[in-house]
Image 1 (cartoon, rainbow, N blue to C red):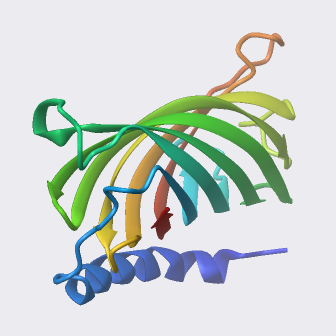
Image 2: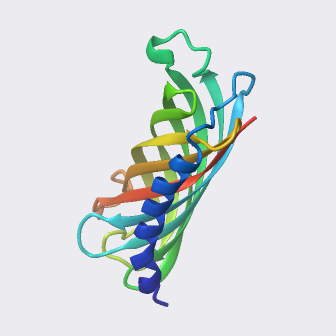
Amino acid sequence: MQISGFRRYLPVLLITAALIFPTLSRAADFDIADCRSNLGLRLAYGHHLKSPPVHLYTILPRWGMFLIHPHTSSLPGGLGISLEVEGILSLAEASNTGWEIGITPLLKFTLPLTRGLHLFLEGGAGIIGENFDSPAVPHAFNFTPQVGVGLDIALAPRWGLTAAYRFRHSSNAGLYDENPAFNVQFFQAGLIYFY
């Protein structure tokens, strides 16, 4: 199964969404002072940074809760901190087509630039099962330390658009002799709902 045709258009779609949605939401502000949690869904395209090529088409459902709320924080700049849990389900295009599934707890540091625009840095480490044929991933069970940066852009008082970049490393942490680094960069876009 080949997904190559779709791969050509995905970066264009993500860039178009990132450019159009901020224009549509200029007047929107987040009204989340009484919110304690969030739900989100991101779509992502990722690719292995070395040879052999691996392309990932990913769905990232997520749930989070504020530890320190960005709109009531006493930290410098109103910095907020959240604990997030993110699932991952990817279709992988490598030597053959396969999949990956996993879960990652993350810490998300949010800096409100305006009431409608939040810059964030997030990172964590999770576990993943990978089932596709590639010398880049010799084992099905791996660990995934990762870090990313992005923006949450208000679309409505409790809804936002997320655009993000993520770097993810996966390996078996030395459990097996063969342990190549599988490094992937992801471009993500999605929606977030605060409640």
